[in-house]
Amino acid sequence: MNIAKDWLKAAYDDILLLNDIIHNKYITNMVAFHSQQAIEKSLKAYLEYHSRNIPKTHKIQALIDIVDIGIHVNDTLIQLLDDLYIESRYPGYLGLLPNGKPSLEDAKEFYDFALMIFNRICELLNIDKNELIDKY
Image (cartoon, rainbow, N blue to C red; front, side, top):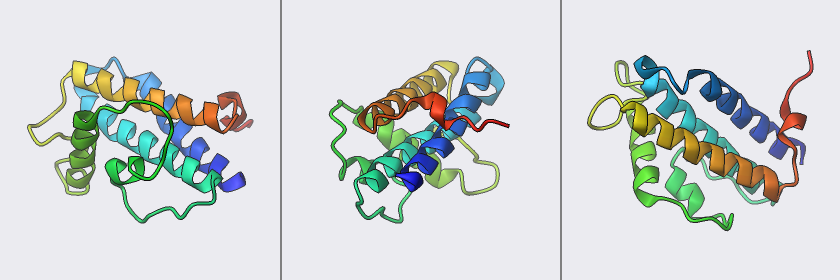
């Protein structure tokens, strides 16, 4: 459970950052990137919790294919986020979609999707997200 919780803590860091930047139209690329990261880390928390091998992949679709979290997922959105991650590893493309910078509406859709996945994983693992905040 500790490693699963660590994955969720890392995902929650992305969610908290997203909460702060979601309305800034100038950094929608960062919203897209951190949404992808939050989803990936949340799914890996679920796999870790269930003692399943975590594949060495950053593809959300590959992770979704091996988990059953009991919610409908938007395949088009997943494909966009998967494409975004691949491109984001190269200078000048951080968090950009194949057609360029996401619109504010796109960014909000990515954020909502990331939040839905994160909240569902917390629910399935019976973890209160307040437990994930480090107390300094």
